[in-house]
Structure formats: structure tokens, C-alpha cells
Length: 164
Length: 131
Image (tube, rainbow over all chains, first blue to last red; front, side, top):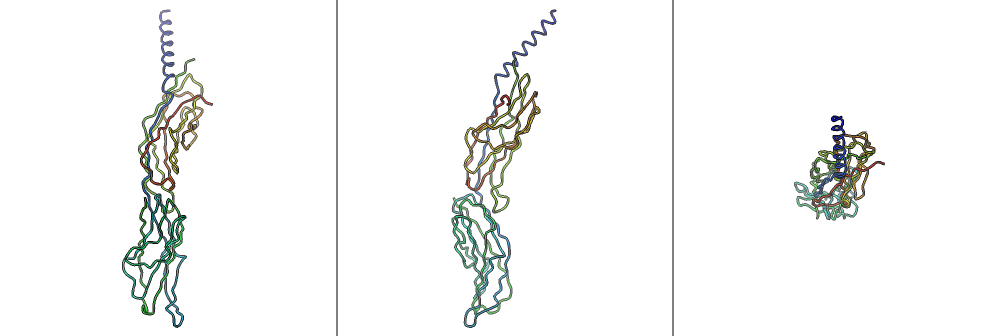
């Protein structure tokens, strides 16, 4: 009889304890800390070949343009980013290599710009865009003074400069 | 009858900072954290559910998604975008004694979010009767 009373008392105490636990800790919290850094990334694909082969008598050799062989893509989460381009060495006498980039939405393309060792702006005011498969057009111009030019290559370096 | 129900979390997740993109032309790459978990004891109680909500909405262009693994025979809602409204994370939780299950957070942002200075949100988990 004494043993049974002790057991009943233990159960009663346990239920009191359960009730106390039930009345607390029905919620819990976590703190999530987050942020986004500046992101500016570009990519170019394709390597066009441009060869001038014709001319109209009395005029300079006929320019050639390639608008199909290359594309570019951009991701920026800033406002007012821009794309510049340059080549590591000047073109030969009488030769001009120009490039034009299709602007992503809301940005401004400068159209064809002659490339040199000094970086030139191609697209400006790129603001919070993520776009791929944008057009790249190359154009090669030559004067008669250029003469016959053996095949050579130029590496065009594109740079994205972040905005604000 | 008295019921015994407790809910706790192990810790807060690590800081998540979006700082890269998988490839130009794509949206920024998401960040995830799967280092935390929650713990539940529930017995002498009806079926339970766990909800989660933020103390304030996320910034424009940002989404914080949480996935709570199920416990106690319950069902996980899978990835749920969190906001200032309580969202069901796990439902139909039965009797469980100190069960622990993983929490996975995923932070994503579109370029429209811009640059976002470090900030915090409080996630409040609540255990309630289900349904």
C-alpha cells in the first residue's frame, strides 16, 4: 500500500513537470545574416576571321564585317557598368579593326569603335542586367596603303568596369 | 490532460553572402547553409505542425528559402520561401521524443536586388496543433 502511494505520487509529479514544459518553449528563433556583394562578369565566345578580298576600282578595298561568329554575355548587379576593349598591339598601317557590341536592355552601345592599345568604351550604362547571346560585330577596313597583309591575329581584351 | 511539447534550435546559420555567378549572363549563384537543426519533443499531445516566419520581408529581388526535414512521422513541405507570414514547414508530427531534423536555408538574389549591405532577419519557428 505504501509502495502504491509512492508510485502515484511519482506520476503526479511527472504530470506537473509535463505541464510546466508545455507552457514554455513553443517557439524558437534563429537569426539569418545575409548580403550581396558587387558582381560584374562578362564572357565572350567565338573567334571570327576577317579577310579583305575585293575592291571597287577607284575605291579603297571593300570592308568586311562578321556579325555571326561571336556573342557576349553579361551579369552585373550594379548601376552604370561599362564595357571597354583594347588590343595588345597596334594594327598595321592602313588597317583598322573595329568592333560593335549589342547593348543589353537599357544600356547604350557606342556602335563600331576602332580598336587600339588604348581601351575604348563599347557599351555604357549597363544597370542590373543578366543577359546572354548578345551580338558582337567585327569590321576590318583597309586602305590601299596596307598592301597585301599576311594572316595574323589580334587578341581583343574586354573589360567590365562596375558602376555604383 | 497535460501535454508535453518542446521546440528548440541548435544555433543560427552562418552568414550567407552572394558574391558570384556561375557564368556571365546568368543570375547570381545562390548560397546555402545546412549546418543547423531543430529539436522536438511531443507526447501526450495531438498531432503538431511547425511553422516559420520572418520578422520582416526580404529585400526586393532576394528570396530566403528554408527546408525543414521531417521528424515524428510528419511531412516536410520541402523548400518554402519565407516571408512575414507563418508558413507550414512540417505537418502531421506525431509522438516524438527529442527528435532532431536538419534545417537547410538557401539565399538567392536576382541582379535587380543590387548590392545589399549585410543585414539580418529573425526566423521564428512555432509548434502548433495540426491541422
